[in-house]
Image (cartoon, rainbow, N blue to C red; front, side, top):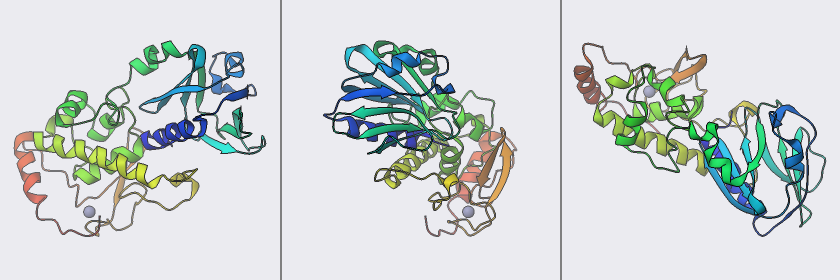
Length: 291
Ligand SMILES: [Zn+2]
């Protein structure tokens, strides 16, 4: 499922493909990706792309004459550039003045394309409801604690709450917690200032790592059978890349959480303060392997 890096990759791709180009024709069959928005408004999209923005997993595209488009990739959505109009699962497409065609393909139709006046995009309720975006706004211990510190949810679930931190999903929440050596079921109130500092950096590192992996015209999600580039996600019952312990998993908020029972051992809960210092010490005695 696309998370922040895939959406950011889509934003950069669209910006690159549309730079100096014009959309001369737009078309889209009638599918549910328009979510009640006006398909006719999409079909009337013409001209140049003025600006691309991303907030969490949403793309906000601004075209000439205050035309705008909100795009969400859902589970299987992807923007691709082709030279033909034939593209499997193409749900919407733009014909450009250089003969290329940009398709929004989405086999499972969980994505969204909603035309709005560009000046309204940032004010849409779904955008206003989003929490801090780690790449757009930056992230540090203070802003991360402000975002999730009051959550009563387990740490990983809190990180995936789009109204707290926008853009993290099952993959990148797990990656960040592994990098930070924090157990996914810890409560935010159990975290120390140091934990927040380490976790904020881990979130950014994981996102930048994923963005660096995404080069070329396309990306492949783990679900599509590509190599698994991740440190912990999807590695259940395989050796931890850091300590060789078997990677464990359990279900949290309806999603499978992967973690290393050794690197991310949960401290005994004899008071949060005490637990913190215990974890801090044990963290320095780990065997270090690759990664
Ligand atoms: Zn480990």
